[in-house]
Structure formats: structure tokens, C-alpha cells
Length: 236
Image 1: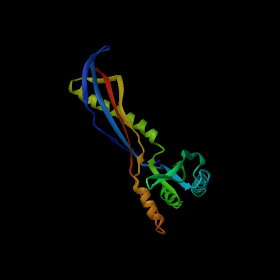
Image 2: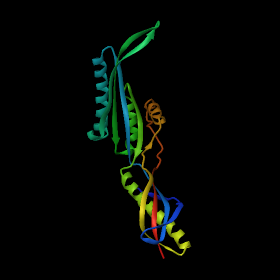
Image 3: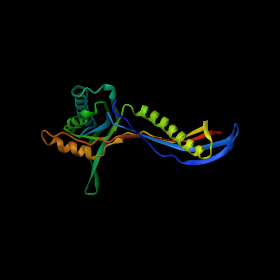
Image 4: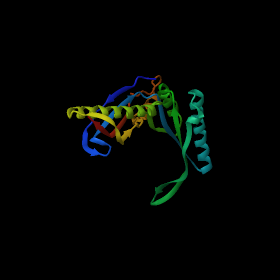
């Protein structure tokens, strides 16, 4: 597992009030934490679109390219078939305007496939290989981490620790101690994947035309955050 950087943010005292079962009252504070992790996987989608005179011909052409891409992903890069899924299919006529009239140009077939790549180091080569297929476009590229869920749990625990530390500071100033927790509210959390911009595929298209040059990209850490509001019991 790659090294995880933990950054604890600040908390704010919100209120103090009396409560049943705690003669010394309570103290309510907010706690926040942020965990930064390095991505180790990627998800993306690619779309194949073909136009022909008939719907069947357009669909057959699209199927050929989809199967070609599927073989590249599974045979060349060892991607599990369970990590490749069709997410969209469409068959529709395509028209253009000529002399003020709508003229049928043909039939268009479109398929979109979602891919999960668990070997992040192969991403550049995968994009290069797919960009060589006619009628294909790649987008919605996101970098992710296989430990993102665990990191969110860590962030929540750190947010609770942060809240208690702040509560203890305020309580000590009044000669009191912090006891158990009266209530906890999750004010917010975020563990979104890091999305790469469209510039990545533009780079891939250029790289495909330059022998020996593969697609490059700069990694950014994924930030997982947690914010809580905690009410602690006070003791003498």
C-alpha cells in the first residue's frame, strides 16, 4: 500500500449548554480531517460510432471496432472481462439540410463502453492503443484508489479525534474535563475520484501520430475528507 498522508484541519467551538444527565453541561464542537492517498487505478469510457447506408451495416461496423477494442483490453493488457461493460447503445438516422430540405445521410450506430483499469501504469499505453481505432473517442477518465473506502473510515476517526482535542482545550480553560459523547452529526464527507480533463485524450491523439511517444499525464493525490459535529459531556 502506498504511503498515506494525513492532514488534520481545525475545529470550531459552536455552543455550550446544560443537558440532562450532565450537571456540568455539554460542549459542542466541529471536527475535520483530510486524508490524501495516491491513485492506483483508473476508470474511463470509450465510444464507438459508425455511419452507413443501413442500420444493420452501421451496427456491424460499430461491433467490429468494439470487439477490436475488447481484444486489445483483455489480451494485450490483461483487463478482466468483468471490468468492461456496455453502458450505452443507440441506433438513429442522420440527416443534413440541402436546399432547405432535410435529406437522409445514413444510419448511425453508437456504443459506449466503461472500463476499470487496475494497473494505473498501463493507462498511457491503453489510451494510445484505443486511439488508433477508427471512429473511437475516449473520455470520462478518472483516477481512483482501491483503498478509498478505508481512507474515508480513517478520515472519520481522525475527525472525531480532532473534535475531542478541541473540546478538551475549551473545557480545560474552564477547569473542566471532557467525558463521553452525547451526540454526533456527520456534517459532510467527500471521497470523490480525481477526474482527468479532456486534454489527456488530445495528448493521446497527438502521441498516436508520433512514433515512440506515449500518452503522459500528471498524477494528483485523491483527497478524502470528513466533517463532524460532536457534543461531549463535561465533567469536573
